[in-house]
Image (tube, rainbow, N blue to C red; front, side, top):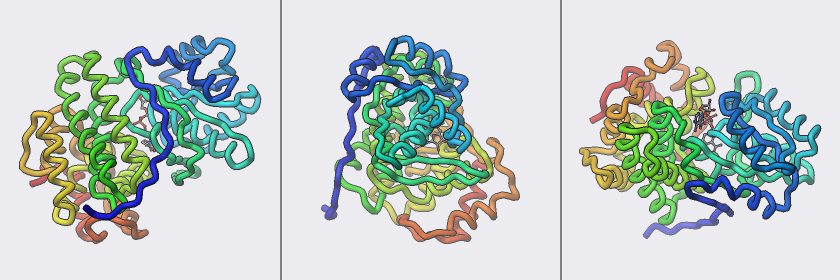
Length: 362
Ligand code: NAD
């Protein structure tokens, strides 16, 4: 057994169909009184429903969340929270909405004010389980870790994911798998996170075929959300490597859709790292095989999983400009960070070319 250190992040999770009904109880347990409900404009109706459920504990609704938390949106939300006298946020939505809650908590944390978040995730991105915040200013996204932005409670209610479109269902599940796959070879990994990662990959892979047949299959929705919790926990507890760095760069610099980028890039990063992380690759293969999909290699297992469920497999399909690949390779090696295989610019450029074309890995 490789020696390890592990300090678990505090996390309160309420999981189950209909668990949204426990929201008031969760707010009361935090000692909070006035919640600002956050969502994207597309999910404003869900936010209003949550506000109704909260009754007098709702301070108001701010349905302006956007991908990558633009600083202007964060400022608007902070101002609205102050104006309405909110003492906590309820974030209903995907990573963009949770991210907005974190942006408010981050600023409140800068002073002496505690501003807890109750997250109600409706995608599989996993932000609700992490202390990672992100803010975009002038086209540049900054991220950091701060334990004070970690949601104080998370309500996972599979019923709220029934409306997630099939395309985003598949790519968001692959986004979750990406956290787990990189967690399996993290330099600061540990056996508990590896168990969660392997089970998360299995559960995500097992949920996709029934969801392809019927996107409103509640049991499969429940499995996918369970996978999101497991994989999000891995993301929050161990360091990510080349895959997350590349996706962050591609998403931020070329404004590509988050879950799709993760889906397309993951098989190619696994191929890049395969020789340097054999044990992790074997666990990815084992997890996907336990979901009924035996495969020759981890990169191929992940590529085929995405392709067979209708997800994009090429960066060129999702808006990546061909003349941006060199810049992306430069940015990926700008700072050194832990990754099983050392960062080699030429090999990463080649990886990006294969991802751009959608080549099936070996
Ligand atoms: P998202 O939150 O941007 O949501 C995408 C779209 O889907 C939005 O229009 C949203 O309203 C809609 N949507 C979400 N759930 C729905 C549902 N159940 N039914 C119908 N529509 C629904 O997408 P995402 O992939 O969840 O999050 C991406 C963002 O989160 C990125 O900015 C990424 O950087 C960030 N993120 C951060 C972390 C972290 O730890 N800080 C982790 C993962 C992702």
